[in-house]
Image (tube, rainbow, N blue to C red; front, side):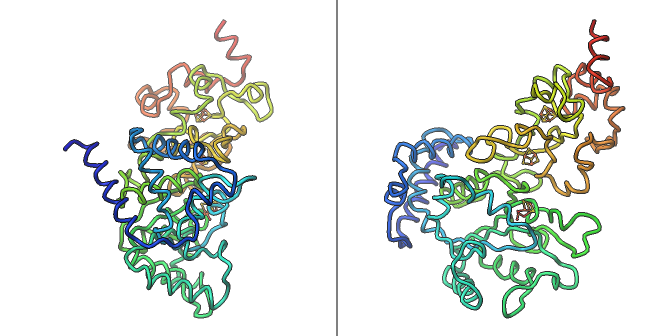
Length: 384
Ligand code: FSX
Ligand code: SF4
Ligand code: F3S
């Protein structure tokens, strides 16, 4: 059996298992989408887009459609730690509900502090009930960094004043899979920035179980839903990079597929926000864009129903899906003065003169040279 056949068989088996579980919804996905004016054709297009995004052959499209129809068999518990709730907002905010957000609704969401109707003791009872009823079967999604200083006392929840730290550890112990949603849950995020008074950490630093990181401040709805869909269909973890990020989403640099890359290669840089280069969509490297050091798929998937993203809006990438970006990628609107590239701690000026380093970060020689000219005029003079 080749790799394709084995994966296909695994997905079919998984669908059979999910189908044998009782439904938790009164209506089917088709009925739910139809009520909201979404046609079957759009649903199939969505399944095709998920398949392509996960870098799988198109034969998997009908399987993803089937899996989405069984999404209510996947119990999900979403915990909030120290964060801004932007990750939830990224998923649910849009002028009209997207198929992504509708499928997320359709999943058996057992506990989510910002979305559920229950409050107070009833909410706590729901959580305890879900952890007991679905032990070993639920997916745990955590949003936010976990404060660990003073034994976790910087974050306490509910009438029992449990610490966030103990709650995450308790919920992780019986989860089928754990996803850290956002940079805070993945790496600590802004509350872990120096001097990190609360001792905030990523979830994988406080639990023993394996964790998939879906970073970004916030991550796109596509990266959240794609990670869930992958688990729904295969029941296993996707291929991960060194920081436990799914490779299908975080395998390439922002810089590799950036729409301004042609200007970078041509040495055409925005010299100050609002100048002619900015109006013409030139490269934002000199305005502090960290796209060359950042692994994420924003340049191809974008946000807000694939319409826009930070660089498209005219600001450089801040490196928000990288560990400790608040400490390592600043100042946000200036190029890095020093960056560790393959063990070489190079200053920007050295990058301009070191072919090796330039090759490592993929900067063309003429683009590098142009980085060190002070103005467009100077550049034109040199070219002439
Ligand atoms: Fe962190 Fe999520 Fe940034 Fe906010 O809550 S990743 S601060 S966008 O939203 O955790
Ligand atoms: Fe795009 Fe930034 Fe790379 Fe320029 S430096 S091409 S703006 S990612
Ligand atoms: Fe973040 Fe950069 Fe994407 S700032 S949202 S990784 S473009």
